[in-house]
Image (cartoon, rainbow, N blue to C red; front, side, top):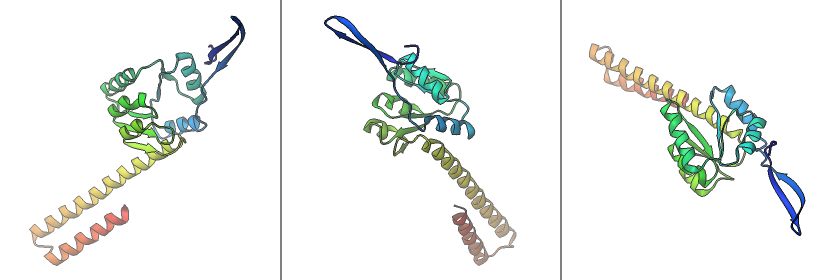
Length: 194
């Protein structure tokens, strides 16, 4: 138990014939994904699991997670997600099973692991990562952040163009044909920026 293993006792004729331990293995990409998440600015990473505390702590230590909540039922995970949100945090939850579905539904951003995930988890999640490679998670976050940045840039370009055109029209400096041309050029700039 101290190594995070679940003991299995084998008995023959009522006598213990042997004891061996079983343990879950983290996904091969887990440690690298956790490191990359920290690199891109994710400040708090917690493991929420129904596994026994010793097993969960052993896996968490192996992949670089220091905050572990183990022995949880689905409603316990949900309560923790809501608690994190009550602290003012934007909470992203990644899960793959039916026991994760309530917490996935409550999270601000929910991500299901597609290949290993249950249909309920995938159906509940905002994002489904197809496959078991956790390295896709930081990549998806980077793409999302770049998309939001691009949307904001395009919104600023469009609003400044319209504001400038309105100012020009009210001052009599911009005529209808010029305004239409400038507006269409700004649309092309927005498209090119996308």
